[in-house]
Image 1 (cartoon, rainbow, N blue to C red):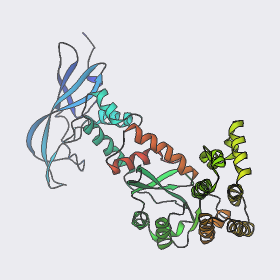
Image 2: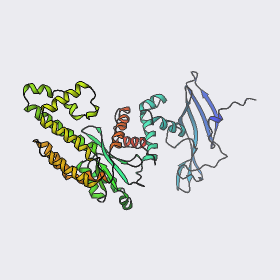
Image 3: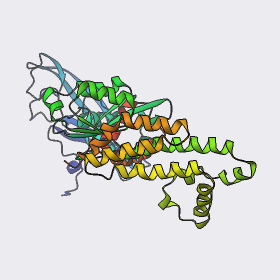
Image 4: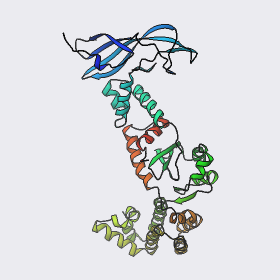
Length: 402
């Protein structure tokens, strides 16, 4: 007597295999299942035993492939009256969700593939519509990451990412201590970040201690309105990035004022001025920069200011850091350029957020690394038109260590 059976491949208690058929090319197989009448039907909503059978129906769903063979399950099911839900419900047969056209185990497989592959690649691999794959993936993501978990938040980092540069932005809130992306919201307005804080309990807000961010005014206003006791820490990276724009303005104005012969020296120096000097390794590039700074005193002073600006974040003492901020602003105001003086005024207005770095030496560099990964996620999907789905994929990629 043969012991070969396909039953172990369908270990579902509430159904039994009644027949199987395979196409001549062996590229498609169909397994017919019937409810096992030894089990009383249960409601798929509440899981409680159901009452009278209302009607019988049949559905065809896709299952995991067996080798190169596409497997379909053709099963009968019952619609029953559930006294707990007080209505007619489809019975739960374990292997498939009502109204879903794939089995639960195939859905889990799709979700696992979508963690590492674009949805169109998964759809092509399984022979499914990409919309079906996305819907399954998003359903799992909503269950795992749909809720915003505020518990245990003490130190945050906030930054924006460009979904489409200059047109669409997302605001990302990171738990600085665990590396978990807590929340992703559309746009980068006051209302965007305010909606994040609106979901926090009063106790959760009081538990916050510090937030690392750039000097974007809408974020500042939202934080001051929602959690005024929290210390705002301005990030070195963004401050230096803003000062690099000032350096470029100085370069352009000094180039216009230079003689025709000296303008040749200015050519090709934009990225030399904006780069960290330690990263300039080519001798010709270093010689070119040295020649430019020797030629133009204003640019030389501005580059000195850039080096001194970075050192402010190295102080652990607020008193020493405050002194260096004052000295920097005094030196900057001696430069005969409006953009440099304006930057000094801005730095003076935001000095509290700079000095807070002495109490909380945090920064948004972790978010900058996350931004790079987000760009990879976006490229793999050839861009996201569904911001909610994109936000869930970001949260999935950064679940944190806690």
